[in-house]
Image (cartoon, one colour):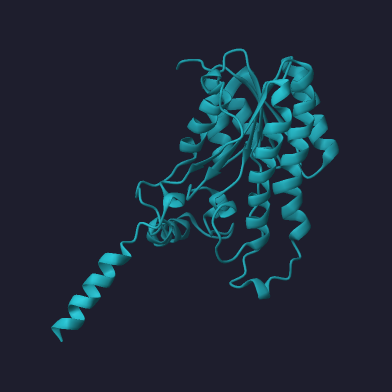
Length: 279
């Protein structure tokens, strides 16, 4: 490893699973000390123990202002500073086929984690960084915040807000030497978008995964399956000094989905025309 983060201290919210877990593992391998924050105590503690002295876990609900402030204080007191804040925690919310069926009962919960948690984490970390020579803030959004679509309207709204918020504070915090960038993952296979439930057996989960794969990949030019480590690698670059001139961007990690529709509609039209002329 190049040890791109040697001497750095990072907080990763939502760090017990998925993208957060992959990023924590990579950051430690690259020399950072990492505080893993999550509501999942069992998996968070297990991950921190496996990463050794370079990692600590603190149970944190990012929708609580007090808990986010406690998290930043914890990182500074235990590791001596804070250089990287990765606001990664997120939830999807209830799924309804159509917006008119949505009872909006989980609105406050989704907004609290996905948007307020990002804003509170950025503010608390930013205050420390502004007084200590700068730092890096990374915020997790989603292609659902860039592309319109069906279902999960509250989730989509929060992710769009995170993108706009990240760009705005990148301008505001630049004078303090704080870089702010937004990660925009696409169809990364994590528990958040697996459409599985806790009562499913491993075999059932695998059947669901295989059945959904063609659906996920239908609008993705690169047919390679996205993995959490793909996002972690981008987070590493943006957190490192190699990205010293990069701030205020929303970086898609999506296999080309946001570049455009890979379906060759013109070819479909021409094929249909040809068949029509044959009859």
